[in-house]
Image (cartoon, rainbow, N blue to C red; front, side):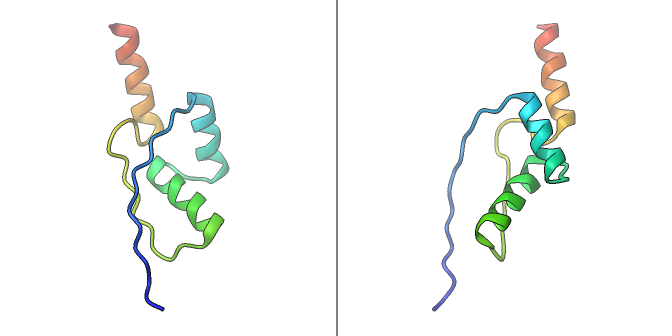
Length: 72
């Protein structure tokens, strides 16, 4: 059987603390790599191309959002 390609859009809301905990638990630096690791460990996907298209992709970007919202 040939490989099957699935493309999807996923949107979720997460607290800053939970994001920090998830990144630490999987030892990842970005949301892209965190989601890739979760999918790989859950269903053993061979190739994963995960991209954040909106919202912060790492803790530095989370900090920048926090600073921007405090200033505004």
